[in-house]
Image 1 (cartoon, chains in turn yellow, brown):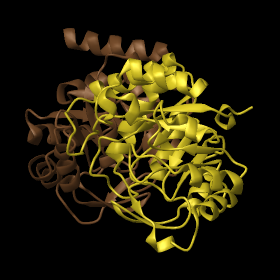
Image 2 (tube, chains in turn yellow, brown):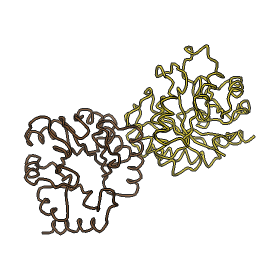
Image 3 (tube, chains in turn red, orange):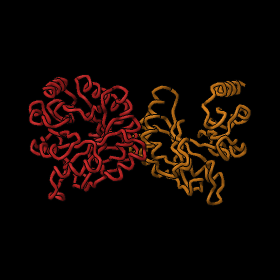
Image 4 (cartoon, chains in turn orange, green):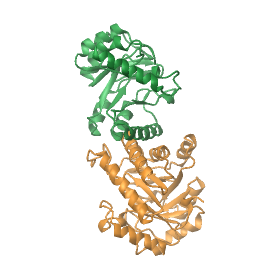
Length: 261
Length: 213
């Protein structure tokens, strides 16, 4: 069975340090690699079932197209993490740079990508993000990368969804499944904020593919999201629960224990 | 030097993100295994991607077939992007990565009548190349020694490398005028064949014997 379809999957975020050309890049790619490898290993060792590498420190994000400097740097970082970590690995390139993420995933042998803007459209903090399912799945086929699974955000955090206010989250999830997503991700309104347990229930009832929670999970509230197939965790694993702080090993342990209950 | 030679027919300008990601992965793995300086060439003329990959993987230089001006190539008309590549190098913090530019690159024709002197001077002084590459008419074709001499004379202290056709037979004739040799086909029985290590050893031995004379 595909490990990504298993239930109670705990997915840890590796927030990759600022990459070349972005405002916070510190001119040392080797350090960025080393830190990502260490975090990936720490998550695996603590008992996480999967990881996602994300260029989180590249704020402010570009919309949909990042340059070759990001694609190349993410490929290099992911190459090293892939060798150091054996659990399933996903790639996300912000913001909505899904072609770059798929390309990197294929080059390094990653297992899935997290995709923003798979179906419908929304206004993200980067601007208008439009559906990409059609071209993305054609590209996946063209590259012979059908083994790479697509986990699609629906009604994603950091975004306004007024433009689709007449479409429920359950309908959005259904559309994503119809368009070939391998899983969908339900989030709160921002990194670290909680998703709605009610929305999770509605989404679970509308699709047969795995449903993951994509923000705001803590050891204390995880039990409210037991119906989810997986929980993506980032900020709450960090010192003081802040995404840009280093990993806190006691928080990793608490999270794994909470997920196992 | 790592080059996407297997990707023919080549893309004239920007290659796909899949190519960038794959080459970056390969470059990193090669760099991990070998201490020698590494160069990246993204065919046919994607100096920006080459720069991005070199920087990410810790490579030392890139090769750019057409850095400045425009030429008629087997991929159509290609214009140099020196202005973008040098700005990009600065923007991503890759100023340690050197740019080696071809002069009148193989598999292309000039669009206008230009003197070799003009081309060399512009490539060096107006386009910021760190080194030059002189090649023959195609992969494996020897360089014209008179052209090489002229380029080296203008380039003075700037490094000039030979970009094609260096063999065991002609290398000693070229060494007085060249600072480096990019060798590929003469190490192989055919372009698809693996590198023959005996041929590599023989060429290295020959260069070393020449240097001692």
